[in-house]
Image 1 (cartoon, helix red, strand yellow):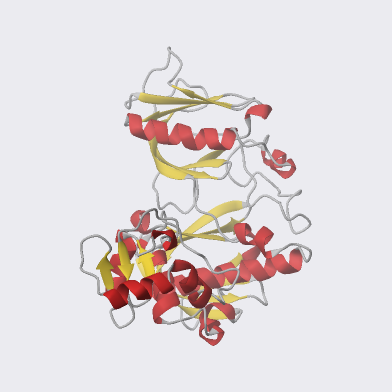
Image 2 (cartoon, rainbow, N blue to C red):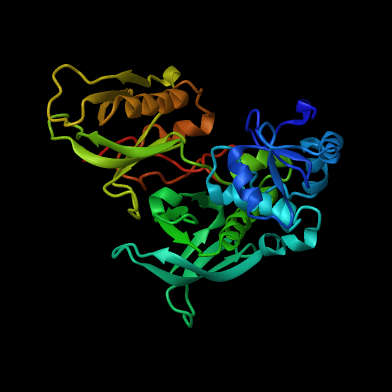
Length: 384
């Protein structure tokens, strides 16, 4: 076999191959391929016995040839998963390519390309935490995703504008392998809703329909922009999430355990990971603007239960945080420094000096007049 063809979705040196498709795959993807035996049959590159005809087939095909065939008509907006993405996205990508052949037959893309979609999703209640079936309607014509509390309701419970909407899969946080977190602006604050569908294809179709709606909105808003410029704006994953301890602005209050989410330059915290709204947030600017991330806490700091401290220095004040383990501290510091080391874009300065809880920003400089407008505007105070 010729190893130069080995490559698939960001994995290095795969040890497995589909000898019916002619592609080399990683261990994780091999399990998915085994679940579609009518399409893909898998062997170990090193451990299994290969027939001469199978070796010749692999040598004459390979990953590049397979991509040219099975990915020939992937819509620009369709999410292409990477090694770090959840199992659901990777599985449905493989099934869409090889089992359903959606990217060789565009008529099969209608569920996420039509500009309109409606159906029922299990949505988590804001106050009681129960997942209840709710009707959702996505309409590109109105530029909105809506959901209804009752099947016969004439008015939606919420209208989420595509312009300010984001979706990211969060299976571990939501507690379901198909769990999706959708965020949107409500009264200038970021509102989180958590949904899932029992059918994995259905959930990924919803996700890509939302990306398609965002894509078509941005095409109208920025007619001169290329697809390559627009695709990174369709959805974003969080840089890091997890529990840390924090203290208040006086730094004399006791430390409290909170759930933190790093969303680009905005660090938000929640009492519970599935809260609808953040309790507070802090804008993380660049080092050129006076932002620094330090290991540890000031020597006089008291009241923290977790030993591994982090100090975020801003032009206005210091924010003191504590992690339970050294590995978590390192991971958070790395995430913060990636943001601090990145120069700020002009529009990001709009969010730098806004104090208070989420929603203080009137979003005046942001909007359809700029392709690089921020996906959110951020405050700079971390409340208790």
